[in-house]
Image 1 (cartoon, rainbow, N blue to C red):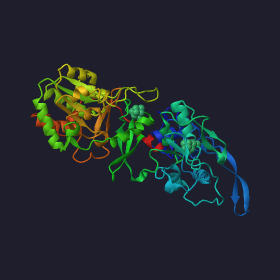
Image 2 (cartoon, rainbow, N blue to C red):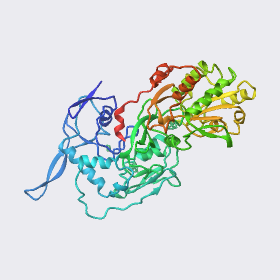
Image 3 (cartoon, rainbow, N blue to C red):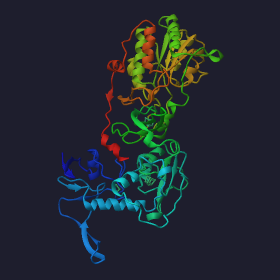
Image 4 (cartoon, rainbow, N blue to C red):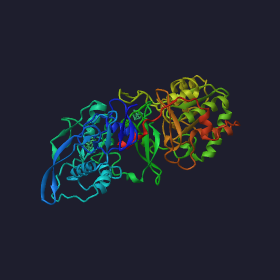
Length: 533
Ligand code: SF4
Ligand code: SF4
Ligand code: FES
């Protein structure tokens, strides 16, 4: 593979790579604002200037201050090149730290901050702002400009999800390019020049496509903020674990940002994964973090309607075991969940076949939603494939279950998850059965018709696996602990099996994982790219 040298280090590159991309692939960060690995090159911020020290030196004329003459005198200095635009060539030698480069970085920083408001204490980007980071790295001096800064619109509503602050904007145009190049929707544009420049909505438009939060995500400063996240948390209090979006069957890789002091998830961000979502997520996917806390089931219940009473999880498990033990053999319908992990579904399928001795397996899933050619799958469920793999084949629908209940072939139900294509009214046939055991993390149609409800961990509260529509198995990690004594469904089901008189040999997650039918594991590549946004 061809190589170039960056600060004396050999860096391989692929044909067509720019210097910055070659560096990024190796985890070397060359300071930059406007460049983004998933967008075209704009080369407008000049923060990425580097000195090419190999080959014939290109000089540019400058005026340099002469202290003896007390005047500017003509001089030359090396012509620096934007690393985001300059193509890497074999044997090229690049310095990102020479005195001229450092001077250029300082000057760019100073220029960008000339009119920048001192908003950091109230800015949501504080703590993850490139202006702050690079100021500390390259220009830790007080401002020399003493005149009033240029004032521009603040708090401009760009649409249902995004607010714009023109004073904070460094006009890198990443947000425009996300709209143009990722979505193909020219919702944003640029007006005026120089220190009057600002981002504006295209005439008659709102920023209202399905990837609006990506404009905020790529904004390197606090000019675009998410109406959902702004003023909710300080990013230095948040921690992140690797997650997989539960929004649809694409299975975008995510960072799950949570506050460990509150055990609360605050947002999802895309995690670079060239095999799945590249650098992006859709708005709906980014909002799926809300289901971790909204309509959460915290307590176990027994009975229905006015008779429903709270019990402990242990008591609920005993009641469930008694009820399922009394059920007619071969007539228990077991419902897997396209929203739960493969581990949960696998243990449920084993319990169905080996303990309850039934082959009547069904799948609870959300109906299709509107997919697109960018990321979104038509399948609104993150783990239909994983549930089918766990069961060893295609599963019958909830409609089939209703038919079987009405036909007398199913007289008791054990169901995982809360979602269903059907409404509570349509599940009325289930509500008439004596035994419907629901293992759920949230309220929904299935728990609503259950005779016994047992809370289990959500995707943010346990380690698990989703298999996406391409058959890629991706593991996600626990962000926060499940409330109280709530356990992951696979652990709860293993306990239920023991109460029913059978050990399933699943004491640890690794026991389940080693028995799990595996798909192709999507490996995030390259990790180094995460330093870019
Ligand atoms: S709003 Fe953010 S992403 Fe858009 S041009 Fe300004 S600084 Fe760049
Ligand atoms: S495309 Fe699907 S998996 Fe990706 S962010 Fe959107 S909902 Fe989540
Ligand atoms: S000019 Fe290269 S990153 Fe902006």
